[in-house]
Amino acid sequence: MSTDGQGSSHWFDDEAGPVVRPYAMTRGRTTSAGQHRLDLIAVVVAEPHADDPDADLALSPEHVDIVDLCRDAPQSVAELAAGLDLPIGVVRVLVGDLVNGEFVHVNRPVPPAELPDEGILRDVINGLRAL
Image (cartoon, rainbow, N blue to C red; front, top):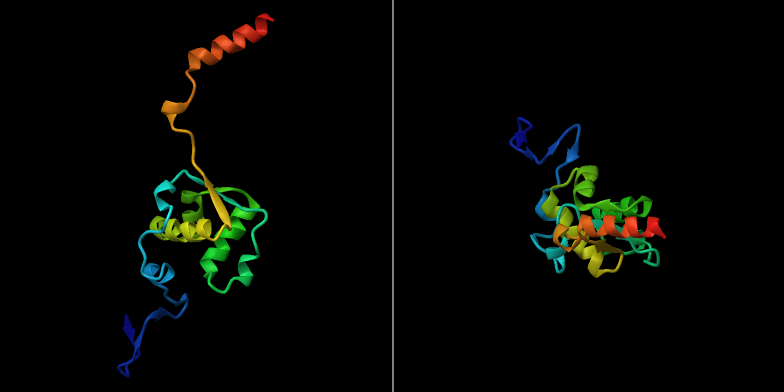
């Protein structure tokens, strides 16, 4: 925090503009419903039938930015955080809000334990080749 010599303090950098604290973007929340599914590689996909997020006054500019990025192409939570220069925790809360508002949905990657065994896949391929 700097002062201007007259005792008033600035909560902003002259070049960058006002600083918005991460907790202000999430309204002080550190979690959101459904957030337990939002690991770093979870993929966020915009709902094609969703209303225009710009028209929803309850959404912040960061919410709208997330929907816009996901409309261009599905994005992982990590990609969204990097692209928006926001902390992961903030992105998780914002994405949780968007999931609840049905603006986006989240696709989780298949855990390695649930993937088919490589040997079985090779046997299937070899069987198909033998036909």
